Image (cartoon, rainbow, N blue to C red; front, side):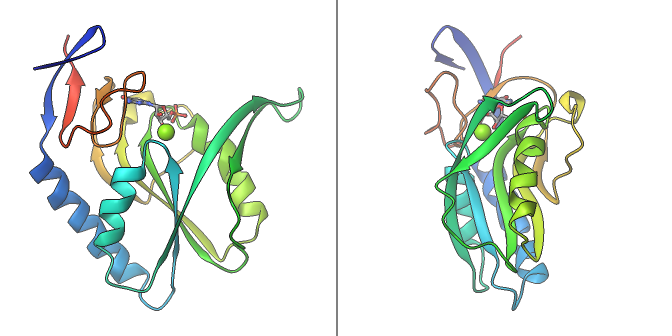
Length: 176
Ligand code: 5GP
Ligand code: MG
């Protein structure tokens, strides 16, 4: 058991299991993107460790870049808007693989994907370390998912609880 701030977490997915699964996702991407020189787009901060590990599993030619998402309230017609900060690459005609730490409700990705499509990439796929199928409220589907988990809060492997826990090599889940 570990304590992060005021909460207790228990071991959930080990670093060995994570490594094995990330290797498997890497092999799928290698097969799917051979000769396509994909641009991997990691979403900061949460995905930085997963993106780095996944990227090192790629044996094909590939590029990587990172962006931050900023969320703001748009007009009544545009609603909730999520915009990318630091997106300098020309996405036109590129094969994009978005890398996320976790898809929870799907709100973040569903608000951000239009901005990616607007730049006319050749294709867009999503790789996520985690999904919580029971929490999903928006129409987003990951193409590569390392683990589907129950609807509980997790920390480690890049994911934080109020800033702490990203450096834990294993994944931990909130204790009941
Ligand atoms: P969504 O927009 O899909 O609801 O939320 C995605 C974001 O919520 C993630 O990128 C992450 O920052 C945060 N999040 C959702 N569930 C968890 C969780 O179990 N643990 C942590 N650390 N962050 C989470
Ligand atoms: Mg995130």
